[in-house]
Amino acid sequence: MYYKIENNIIVEGPISLDSYKSSLTSNELIALGYFPIEISAYPEYDINTQYIIMNRIIDTDKVIHEWTVHNIPDDDIEDTIYKRKICMKQNATDNRYRVETSGLSINGIMIKTDRESQATIAGTLNFLGLVPSAVIDWKGAGGWTTITAQSANYSAIAIGMHVQACFSHERALCEAIDLATTHAELDSIDINSGWPPNIIEI
Image (cartoon, rainbow, N blue to C red; front, side):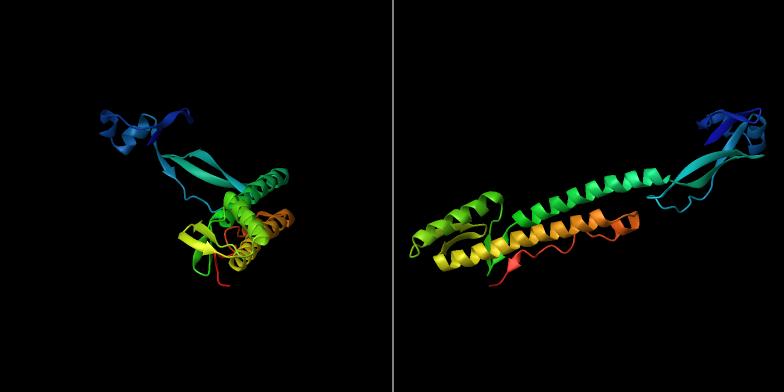
């Protein structure tokens, strides 16, 4: 790629050379004002607190793309931290809902834990409270099983503890996010780990 230079000013480019100009030597191209582009090494910088600007420097036989690193103004950093916090808390909420409703294996029996199933389990528990001797045919995520009042109580307690653990972890994450004041502190918060397991042995 080349720039067209006139009177030490870039007037066109970056451009590719046509077949005729491609046959010319480097000195011939420079004499016609076509300077090749040389790109300097890309600098390391902190994307959260800095940004880079590309400067075009006209040399005797080339145009150099040189990068300079600049600090983001403090007010802008605060704005990016605020927006990042909103995004992280929403992601934490999404993770909590996914773990909460993705099912729970209780003693090897997979129980659905989506909101509809949670309501159904609560209704079943109420029914068995009225008729303790009843045996319920239950279709879980892994197939059919039977539920008694005792097993329903165990399941309801396990599911309730699982759901509460999900919300407790989300709350802890959101509180940590709110307390963070720098991007580095936000980097240290892992919203994808620490969630309760989906397997419980009673």
